[in-house]
Length: 296
Image (cartoon, rainbow, N blue to C red; front, side):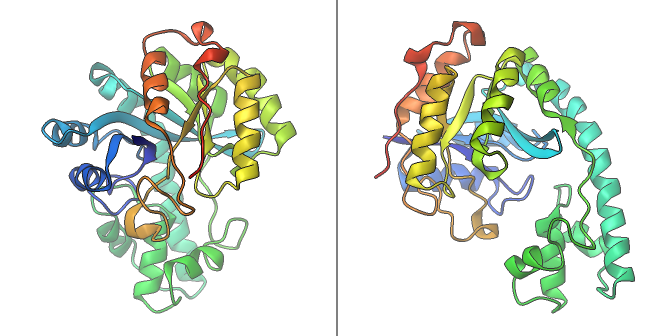
């Protein structure tokens, strides 16, 4: 059996509704799936309700955008308790306020630069979600400024470019501390997208003290060597090895639910280890909790 501990719905920047995620998981034979929308818990109740008669185990989660020493870091909070949803939503509000302000400035810069798009049009594309770059990319594509959403990311909306300036982010260690305080299982997402090995180990030394429990060791953009190294580091720091596809539906068309880009496989034992961790504080997690992940 397999699981997928990192997916997104259209409550943030995915294309599937929470209900459709459950349907797709059942279709693909995924035993357990975690919904980790960016900086929002708004889809979790629908997600959990949809799973009740499906036979699929739904894990309520969130992916919080943060920063550590100038690098963007994504922290997952898994096995969120319903009684804490509102507290988490209130905490995330500060991120979302900054994001909305950043979005309006991005729309202004684009229009001043000759890319005439309406912010209302971006809001319409985003639906109930707070817009991010993928929604701006779709707006640019709709107006014919680019030939694809991917091209928009690589050119007009590229990081470090003229137009896109990310909103100020929360401190990664404080995000971990907060999630731990609300009884979440804290997992570092896709560590090698932003960290070198040396930087990662330095971060983990501190993050463990704030309540970090796990780290993704299987991810669609990781090579076999990346996954092996991540597994080794997870074991060194007594972190639970996690994994997921970071599924976004048609917004990342080459990523398939449960399988990712290179036919990855996250065994069901990963879900079980993370679930067990939700019952104990991080200091009780030992090397025996680290599951050896395999690729098929």
